[in-house]
Length: 232
Image 1 (cartoon, helix red, strand yellow):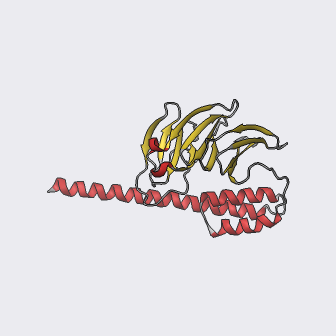
Image 2: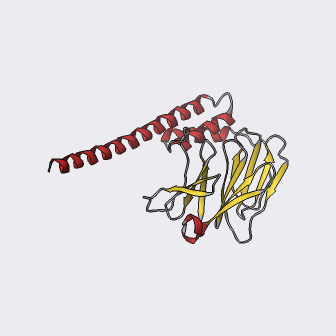
Image 3: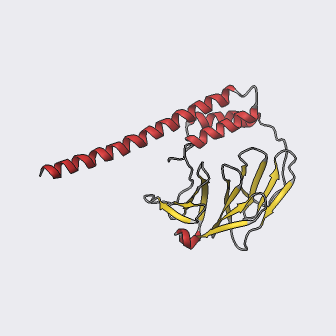
């Protein structure tokens, strides 16, 4: 009976540690979001573009009222610098880690890479017919580009434009073969994919093998991201 009681206590303590750990992470994200929002507002009179980026970073950390208000204040101060005629319908875009390139994705899954200073088209990555494009993401070292399509995730070499490998929907376990969001780990070694079945999977980029699956969501996942230190 003592062993049973000890086991119950151990389980309860472990559960409490998980709950407190989650609350601690959430509190940190809320604090960071509010700090970034405050910096965005304070920077408005100096650099409106930076204010918008800070406000977006605040929202990325946590969807706080302060972050939303900061973005609402910053956007009217932003002036259009350039318009790129990239796609008939744009689905997503992202800057390279060094800020020198812009990768844009069309709703048809086609991806184009642009020079962020001259807006010259540097590279076009074709998509298969009858697919939809969702998101595009650079690896932290800027060498790889992952594109999330309705049937697969494709990883490309950014310099050569060569397709390195793809992960089909039936391999990922996603129903209807749909994979919506992707995120590289900070060390470039893993790729996290959010599936429509609510069970994101993490893949080893070098071996193309599944590392683990995140089970527990009852609805489709509408985002996925690593913590800056790569531990979460």
